[in-house]
Image (cartoon, rainbow, N blue to C red; front, side, top):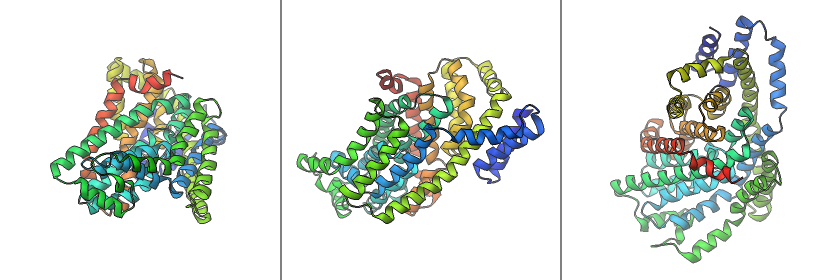
Amino acid sequence: MITLFLFIVLLALIFLSVPVGISIGMATLLTIVFFSDNIPLLTMAQKVFTSLDSFPIMAIPFFMLAGILMGKGGISKRLLDLAGSLIGFVKGGLAMMTVLACMFFSAISGSGPATVAAIGSFVIPAMKKERYGAGFASALTASGGAIGVIIPPSIPFVLFGVTGNVSIGKLFMAGILPGVLIGILLMAVSYLILVRKGVGNIKTDIEVAASLETGMAGAKKGINVKHLLKTIYDAKWALLTPVIILGGIYGSIFTPTEAAAVAIIYGFVVGKFLHKELSWKDIYDSMVETLKIVGATLYLIALSVCFAYVLNIENIPQTIAEAITSFSDNKYIVMLLIIGFLLIVGCFIDTIPAILILTPIFLPITTQVGIDPVHFGVIMVMALAIGFITPPFGANLFVATAIGKVSIEQISKSAIPFFLVMVLGLLIIGFIPFLSMYLPSLL
């Protein structure tokens, strides 16, 4: 009865367009008031405070600010130049370089929508000019942006690690190969679509990209070594970012939270003094933008901790676990059931609240059937990341529609092939744990 009441109230409030954080808090509060005699209301206030009194949580606003500063400081353009030099010579080179640039930027941003905004502002106009189609261009960029939360550093991985008490460093390492796999699959399906449509001519791609000051200007019929070396040199400070962040974490020089703080300083120094493209107004705007995002995120985290506390007190995760394992205790069937559920949830709820709500429920279940917590963390984040390109929520879709000036219906239709290959990639990662667990095993 308590479980039913809690989730009915939560879903009802969400479908009534009440903000998710408030919905979580109200559902928790009403459940305590009407059904729980052994949880005093004062406990809810204490949980809200203590949940934010956490050193790992500080990594979230730090990584957000670092990513915004780097986007405004010229790093995204230089990564795009490098991507164009590496792969711009193939048919549909603009599409290929879009995905590759998203992969590069993912290694410094930790956010899906931020990746779409940083890369899309350059490549979507270029693909539209070359007649790739506004829907295709916007959908591809939105899909590539989803890699932003898979390749480390990743804000959802930080949240999963904090919520599930799982090593954030291992989660970061585990996301590298899955992120690369998704990128390769997106490139492959893009190539097939463009070949079928008969667009993506190499020569005109290069001319269009050159007019938009992208690195494809140096690509001809193969890799132009001289131009490639130039773009690598120009992007050297951008390429050093993941080396410093991840190298510092795995070298035990600093924690993920300290790495995020270092990333802010590094992004400021590179953008302001080395690239000289970061103005004081940009810095101010970046801080304001970060504060707005953090303000909407931290209260949600705090109330989600209260929600998880009530779940545990009332033994709701154990009840759900028994229901699922009574259906089957085969870990692959359990995994398929959970993946299907997460894909549906991702259509309606943002990644952050979904992780905070569902991790306390599903992590004990997957651990019970023999799925490694790090492996499950990758599966969960990947499944919810696909929600970035599925309506009605689809955060990446809305960012891309604003840039590409297309309707949500048009971009959603164009995103179907990318959705399908991302689901394929998710199933490959789910059923071949080696791909996500190999690198963490080296630690």
